[in-house]
Image 1: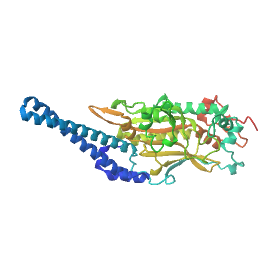
Image 2 (image 1 turned 180 degrees about the vertical axis):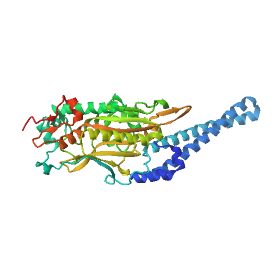
Image 3 (image 1 turned 90 degrees about the vertical axis):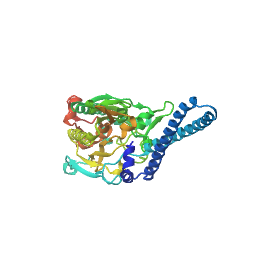
Image 4 (image 1 turned 120 degrees about the vertical axis):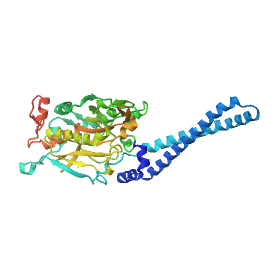
Length: 425
């Protein structure tokens, strides 16, 4: 959530942010009104309580009619204090409810617009000319079936649409990707983490995933637990309700977990293969830093993502995501999109978001500097979302005979193998 003091001091900035996101601007004025009621009812309660305490000291010293009047007033005060307390609690609850609906403030440099209004910041690698090489590229599913690596038919039989099995070299390729990604993250100073896939409601809400993203989340009603769509949730909530010493920052974690997404609203999109699925594994980077360091850390996370995709020898571009396509917790987000030859376009492989103080305020995570305590900043960045990375590797590194060249960075994790070769023709 945002800082209420900032809302009071610069409501136009918050309105502009809501407008840029395409979200409800009226929410700002409703929140300002609720906050004013919260503060005024708090003042009223304090005044009545002070009078009540003063009266309590006078009554034992009074006698006769004076004491009777004081006792009468004490009865009135008790009712007024009770009512003021109820008003204060109701206003505070309304303020918190409205505040929880307000998205993070968009960074002023973010391009304004919807999904297609991103700005391309840079492009890396060369797109292969398959025509010049004399063959038409196969898509990842055909390649995966040739290699004995992907089985979507049995995935659908066992679990339904958008589920799959990785088999043989497909399973080994996932393990190689996860180990290589973790090796890069560890070398960069991240602490490896294996995180829970089930979290409590406060963890999911605190990271901002029960707002606009709620329709994409799996909920276990009987246990009141949520399946995470990313280990960002568990990594953000890891220090929930804690005060961290400033000399511990930055804290950087690399989490590995299964991820679950309903893919609500994606009916008919990417139905072939394993590009858009309900369950997948991912290595996620997560950082806790001082607020003034968040923009620099955001650039560092992006550089680590670029390093990873470059090591996989994939052509990709970096985009500055437009305001209307940001998640509620992100002030700014960069995506790295790899070229997918059979689709003839770039598709998202990684993203990194600067969430500033938004999540730490919701999760009550603070930093202590000398005697001062304040919220810190949180950031997240995908290092390797496995299925999409497999899609990009298979399609970009395929050979005319259906084999796939293994990027050098992965070879030590595949027993030195340089090629993945078809098991069927």
